[in-house]
Amino acid sequence: ETGVTQSPTHLIKTRGQQVTLRCSSQSGHNTVSWYQQALGQGPQFIFQYYREEENGRGNFPPRFSGLQFPNYSSELNVNALELDDSALYLCASSGMTGELFFGEGSRLTVL
Amino acid sequence: GNSVTQMEGPVTLSEEAFLTINCTYTATGYPSLFWYVQYPGEGLQLLLKATKADDKGSNKGFEATYRKETTSFHLEKGSVQVSDSAVYFCALRPNAGGTSYGKLTFGQGTILTVHP
Image (cartoon, rainbow over all chains, first blue to last red; front, top):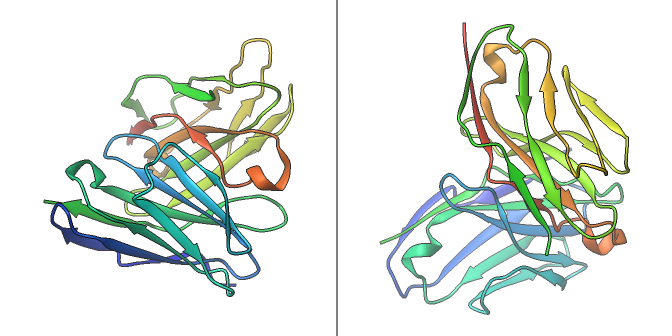
């Protein structure tokens, strides 16, 4: 079975721009979660999608938004980028067991 | 709200030394507790978990016991190897059924370096 894959692995944006990060879930998983991991910190929960609906959100502003598609892949969109948005963005998928499987992340640098 | 506090790092040990990484939590009810490991350049991997009080999770020589009375889930290993060098994260998940599966609260991480 394939694991969780994320793209792109690295990207650089400037303040005010918008970014889209993508995630392919592990086969058979219908739940996707996104996390932000700032340098030297633990991951922080952004939101979770289950069967294409957002069903949980952490303490992040509305300019962080997402989508989940019928094949359970997902996107994270961030509008009006700020310098503090520079971080590693992690996607995780889970199935019936509830165990999370993480991708290797997309490292975003905002200049 | 929920929170997880890990011991200050980094931790540097010699091979075959005993390892303890402290983790305490604040949460309502009875959360599930986890240790994740992040090797350089890789994503987070589940190391072990415990879902109720007094459960002991174990994997690859690592152990942690869910202590409700002290709200702790300390990670231990009797003899570390160079290959154990990584960042270790303690995390909790509220027990709210399927809707909570992805909603982990992580500690800040502890960097472990093991020298030969």
